[in-house]
Length: 389
Image 1 (cartoon, rainbow, N blue to C red):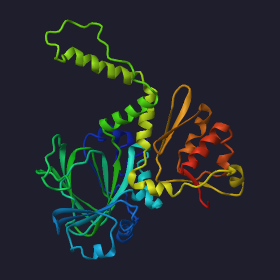
Image 2 (tube, helix red, strand yellow):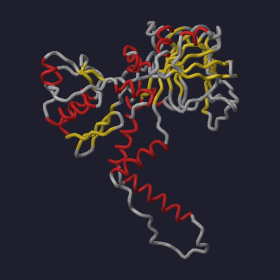
Image 3 (cartoon, rainbow, N blue to C red):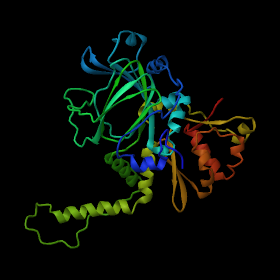
Image 4 (cartoon, helix red, strand yellow):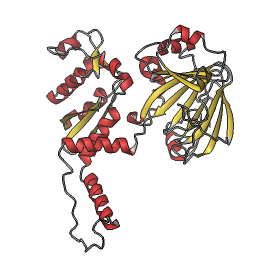
């Protein structure tokens, strides 16, 4: 079994004992951590129009806990105070491919569950206030030191300070306080309150995970039901009793409505799977323009010729991809769309959904028309692209 970072746990033991259950502090999870990103590089990303970034000041010109969205300019950074501010940049693993190695450390958790690498930089005193997250997060200290105060029990009904854009807890009582140095990492399950304060110029890598809400899932499911014209069965009440009040919706009627919905879900596995696959692979709105930049005209492209010339297909880092199967076919999900293919393509799904470039040696394994057509569709939406075209 693979060891879980610098602990005596295996990856499965971590999942069984800690995942979504309790926090875990790991000293030197990434020993001798190299400087993967500088503060200047992070600030440069925050100046890009297509990259999502935020600047949080504990005492801004407009009031406490002021939040400003990027892009920013050098002048914006120049007028910042010496302390008590934080710069946050989302999806840095996609903008800087070398940082995808950080996310790869967590490949024992499904890719469709992993969201992004958010990087924060803060001078002394920098913080985003005591808060909770609705998702799992690993907080890896990259540079400098940060003091984390955490609670050891989840916050069931959080109360936030009124009038702020940030959701900062009205009351926060810490159970533990730890200073994290470069290479140290803290795991927090959803809803565990935490408050990180920079002790000096510091950078923290936040590895976040996707956790769709029930409402998001129901919305996706409804769209798939409508597309497939499923879920058309009407309400039935063959055991109806004489009512005392003809305006009253009683509990037995409510149970029948509930059972009707449950039966619709139970009878619609393929539709639900499609809804889940689409939902989990939707491109973030903030990344759509960057994803589209890698779409190229693939008409009249001879894949065999390109591969014979040494060309390679590269994965678009901004497009999500996942796959599943039923008894009849394989379903591949990419950028919120579904692609059906013959079961014969199952043997090459690691190639089509992987991150390594597709080369001529892979093309020889893509021999069926179904597999080639599927790859062509993925190239057409920009999921894979020719480096030089």
